[in-house]
Length: 412
Image 1 (cartoon, rainbow, N blue to C red):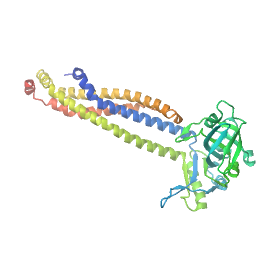
Image 2: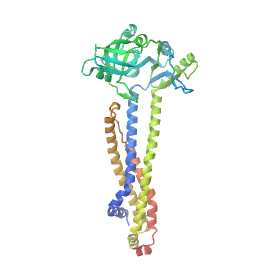
Image 3: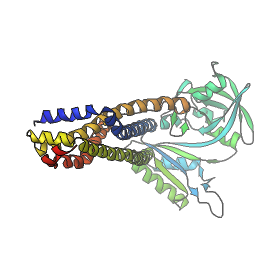
Image 4: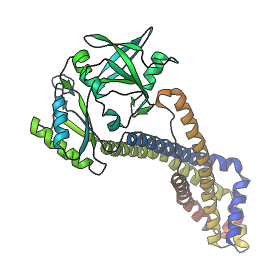
């Protein structure tokens, strides 16, 4: 038998038992669809998070207090009263690879405007914050050095906060009440930030900014800051900047557990590793469906060989070789997996879009749940389906090709 005739015979065999063929493909369809959905959601989420983190600047470095380990039933917590404004000035002066240093002090406070209120993170910062975080004011102006020098009670709102407190009303020039831990002040709104959305688990639009001098002296009554956001001269000098910062802080504290230094590049690398590990685990679970589907196909093919024993004997009697019989049943097994794989890819694509739609409705604050279906994922899924068909089809096909023609003709 020629190749095309063998292929046609395989199609005829499947067409003769459509219901059985469909049922045998279910495991493959479910497994492939699950793999496609997992890969598309994982890749889409990873790409979205990476883009948002990179938007903050790949040369961004964060310096924060270390964690004091808990003992005797006490909870681990970050060290307090550690950094001062002078530490930031020293880093900027001595670290040649550092371009800007922004000290930050923040608390979660209640903001009030008429009968509306919002509990958000209020940040005490310096004017360089915009350049370091790549986060710019859209309306009005940002904090400047005159505000710092005069301890002005001025505030810049994130877009989400402005919408919550003012709605369609223009917030610029309005006064709002900021309730601090020990005191409450009226602040004048001087600006509204551009919308930046959520990065990881933090929403940049749900925060506000005030001069760090005002935060320290009037609201929080402290000389300390919580952390530093530092901008390296470039992406290439980030590692050099980290080494310089570490040397400066170690010289002061003589204990590298008192502080923590991290970069956006390290965060991206860690995030990618976690996402890939998670995806591999889920794909492995979905692979069980493919394994079960492959076993089901092998069983169906064995039943088919038994039912078509006389047909096999007739074909051998009219000149079909053992290799022709082998290829015919192997083709049937592979076609079952390929067709099931194609259907699974289609269902996986539809399923990923449905998940993205539901995710954007269930978790609106997280924004749209992105999905990415790459050609590599489709090829991987179809290639795996083909491998399953070959692996689980070899035994039934080999059994069919080894039937004795005389015994096969007597069967049934």
